[in-house]
Amino acid sequence: MSGASRTSRITCVGLLRERLKEIEGKMIELLDCSTVETWENDPHSSVVLIIPRHHWGKPDDKQLRLQMEIKAAYGDWIEQLLAEQRG
Image 1 (tube, helix red, strand yellow):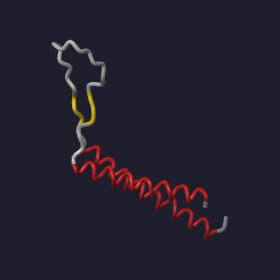
Image 2 (cartoon, helix red, strand yellow; image 1 turned 45 degrees about the vertical axis):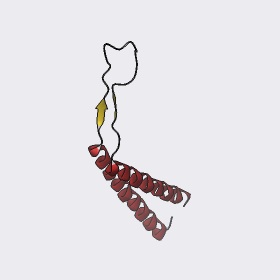
Image 3 (cartoon, helix red, strand yellow; image 1 turned 135 degrees about the horizontal axis):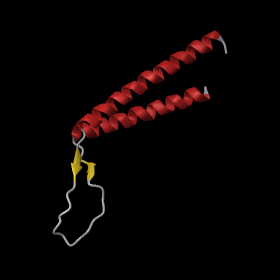
Image 4 (spheres, one colour; image 1 turned 135 degrees about the vertical axis):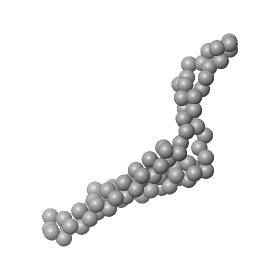
């Protein structure tokens, strides 16, 4: 591998790492503003449900925006990673 090619490769890897850190930050922000709700079974009900007691709450506008941003950013990141691997 030539010196120029090696330098270019390191730069691409560095950019991929930076972008992945940005995506990670958005994911942490999404988790921080997400809610987890608890479902309580009615002990007097004649219906027995076997389901998890906890589930994600309904997303608000901020959460939906973050989800779309993360999905788009991750899709771009994967494309760049695959292009680098084909390189």
